[in-house]
Image (tube, rainbow, N blue to C red; front, side, top):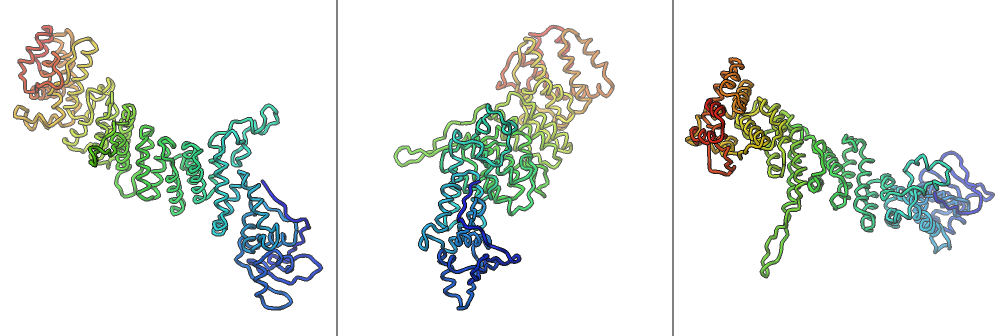
Length: 626
């Protein structure tokens, strides 16, 4: 730490109790000065020769053998006045980073300037500040902290701004000119404590670009804000380092923030800190991690920050949502909301993400006419895929909340429904979890949520799970079984039919025509499949898929089932016939496309004729059972 010694005479200030100070001298004291709660018995000549304020006060005091003046409002109190008084007596006094600001303010209060005596205290302190203190990283921060106690006068004297500029300038120097002695919060590494000359001590280590961020965390929020703004305005430090500084400050000021456990003992003090951190974040994307932004958002919700702060965080998170994790998005809902997690704010984040693809700018065309010209989408397919997977995972987690409305689940899922996803296992897991935790939803709601997934995009494992899932509507199980057959045919080299219109209609309301089955049958299709129906349906498909077993194989399959399974089989056959489903499946083996004009009303006979042209006699025999 830098220091400066003033004066050469020995210190002869003595104490008589806690509240009395005097100078040991043969000359009797002729002035008493009350500074705060301490009384100083001193001599006029050394004091008045250097302080214009004391000259004025003494001249206004009543006549007597010992004048008494009060300076209770002197900055720095009795200790600062004692430094100034010792300087007047030419006694040795030491100035350092901890007392120099209070001494400077006290000297200003006492008007100890050059007009009275050359080399007065104000001049000497200013020289010490500019030549030593402001050139030291450690001392500059300490001095800046001490300005807080005399903030008004320090602002008037521009001491605070000089300290801030000194700190910002030191933080902005090239790292090649920095060694570890600049920092005072960092613990020494083991190799730095050795005496090996090859290590060259501290200078042997490479200085990181963010070497200063931990040290600034010692500052109070208002000073910290001003320092970081000054650093940003210099335009030398990168946005990533500025972002690291904001992150370090949040971690230091909020215990448990790094682990997502927010402990806000005093909301009125914590809210301005959080708002400042958000305000200081660099505008460049990626300057801080998406995980950190989401922690800030969670904290802002807990602290009930203003809507402006929350909206800014939502916007910034949306700009880099693909970096987030499911756990990051699990934002607890406020008390009284009814749900476990705040899905509404996640919807806003996804909207902000999608807005990146909807950027537009005005452009002048045809004179004064302004037309909006839309820029091409900037979202990559990889980003959309990652966000789609993220939302699927998030839906799986919030689906565990028994109070989550279906509208919120579906609304969030539909926001990413057009994003490219090679597989739909994620959304299937979310749907299955929702159906598991909400067994009382209606058939129409069950149908609505199942429309979110594409059975064609389920993996083999997901299909195996789905065909045994009693929570799914029967129509979905049939679709899954169909595409399982399509996949089997494709793997064996057979021609693979595209999705017929009848199957597409199964998951929509478009099949409610005069050719459809009765209302009771439609309700059967939308109802959850029972275990017996699932076994029966799998048995029916197994029989259809047998290679060379003939009719006897089909009989063996049915005979192996229980009475309940045979009843369910009978019901399944009725449903399949009423929808003419499997006949349509096999009739499209010829390769009709998904957008063909065929529908489920085509006759069973024509379907069988098409199949007969491509099937063995044994396959024709098995067709007759459906």
